[in-house]
Length: 53
Image 1: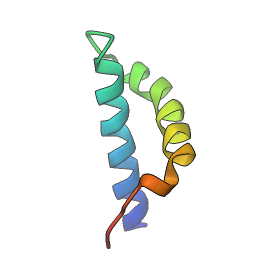
Image 2 (image 1 turned 135 degrees about the vertical axis):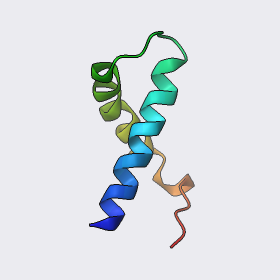
Image 3 (image 1 turned 180 degrees about the vertical axis):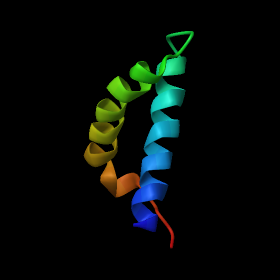
């Protein structure tokens, strides 16, 4: 469960970073809407991800 919390926090931060590049102010619903796109991008590029334990 700890790993899920880490991934969730990472996705939340990455979604916030992405959306804030073209929208201000950023609302919580904007981050929620962006998480799916960020997750799809990570899955598409999973070979370039290096998570260390």
